Image (cartoon, rainbow over all chains, first blue to last red):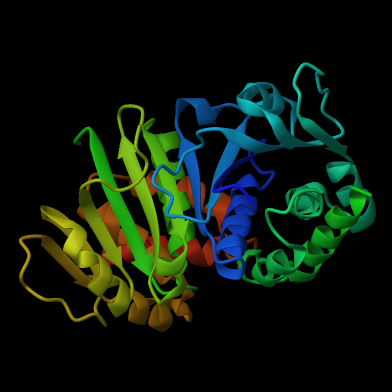
Amino acid sequence: MADRIDIRISGAGGQGVILSGIILAEASAIYDETNAVQTQAYGPEARGGASKSEVIISQKRVNYPKVIDLDVLVALNQESYDKYIGDLENGGTLIVDDSIKVSKEKKVKVYRLSLIAKAKEELGTKKVANILALGALAAVTDLISLTALEQVIPNRVPAGTEEINLKALKLGGKIVN
Amino acid sequence: MADRIDIRISGAGGQGVILSGIILAEASAIYDETNAVQTQAYGPEARGGASKSEVIISQKRVNYPKVIDLDVLVALNQESYDKYIGDLENGGTLIVDDSIKVSKEKKVKVYRLSLIAKAKEELGTKKVANILALGALAAVTDLISLTALEQVIPNRVPAGTEEINLKALKLGGKIVN
């Protein structure tokens, strides 16, 4: 893994991108012993339909906790994709819901996955699409393991939703293949 | 309000300091139209008994999202107080649970409040002490209003706990007087 990996998880308000960011950062720090920092910015830009959570994973101390070079973009709605795709570096990784129209201009690895529809179909709620996205992230990159995410999820999701979120994680991990 | 206010909410893991930070930042940004940034750092320093969430509230764009000069420290356990009190600026505001032993070296405004015990006594669970702390923060500073916090809390706390958290907020607001 590179010294520093910058990840942005984005979507509409209510799609749980903050929670995903917290889980990812915590799993990385605790189970992979990295330094992870997770940030949300609110303000004029956050009052629209694109919400974002940023996670920096590093082997070293993170001096600047906001995204510098975006390595991984997760987008759960069209607006957040449109807004943030321009920041993704060449060679970066893009994980998007398959409801999103993706342009082919960039030289990035694209995973266009049925996150929202599968969540709804197989687990009865599209609310857990954010956790499917984490499962997919673990499957397609070496940034985080499913095992680490599995440890953190029960402590971070609302009480009573542990099981469905763990199912969502597994489903996300499988969806890629 | 000053141009930029740096706030740190700290406590043990499980005391809900991340959630408090998120609620505070979101309430400030949406209802007071500030630019608010909320950050957690995980890593070696976070693997002990002191967890922290930082919120920067600013009228301008926040260029550096970590604490520069700490204006407000909320501490819910002794370890986080001991660890972070050194960062609080002279003239700053300290809100701590009354289970914490506070030294008198610093020239800061000290609010030593029965957050955990009152939560347990009046609401049956000490889990909501983090929200009492937000209520107290609204009561003793002009950084955020109870009304703004009231709007955000139902969207951010686990489903089914909206009411108890709103009660906790009110209780925190009253506890100061």
